[in-house]
Image 1 (cartoon, rainbow, N blue to C red):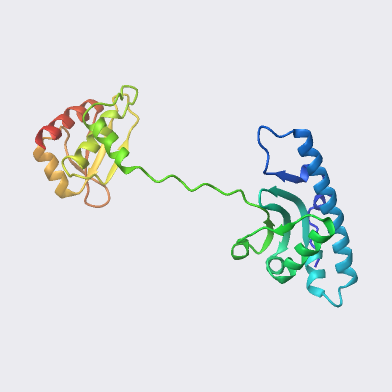
Image 2: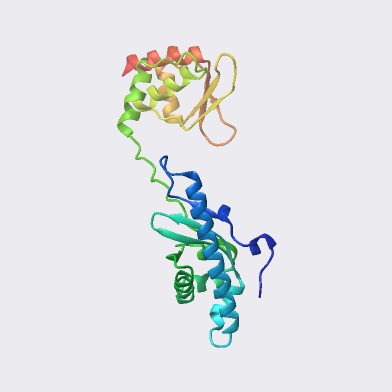
Length: 252
């Protein structure tokens, strides 16, 4: 069944339909535009010819005819590895055809007719979508940099030792206390909530065992039980956090 839900997809390609991935600071913009115009014209003309040929040969090659009826050419990606077709696919079944022998035959026929090496974009959408699949060149996303845990530990130690300027951070005292408790005293917290109070109020929650250790250290806040569970909470101001941090560091 023909899928023409967006009539703009039936408009012939123009230079604006070509996504250029080869430019650098030394290239001439007008030359790129002219190249894109030639690419769009050649591929668009070849597409129309192949589509008409598929319709005329529908009896002998029904798969190609069905695919071309439900495949829309939206543009072209000019990449360092060659030109990649930018396609809108109406359904998962058509997408399966596109990434099988029928799609390979289409790319070969278009390449021969347009005299440009064209290919189908690699795409894993078949497992995620059933309709309205866009298959085009995806710009590679650089892998995220590995976390420098040693640098993080060094910065945490600097915060604990008071070597980092935190004068503009209203929660600096509680942050330093939490790091000191976990890194130096081995007392992890379970939850921390900040109240946005001018004095930097924070409520820290601990297991009963760790709460007893804090009381033994002389934490300047009365313990209170949570509404749910057995965790014990302590509410401190930013100034109290700073004072108790000194106590924690002196005890380790």
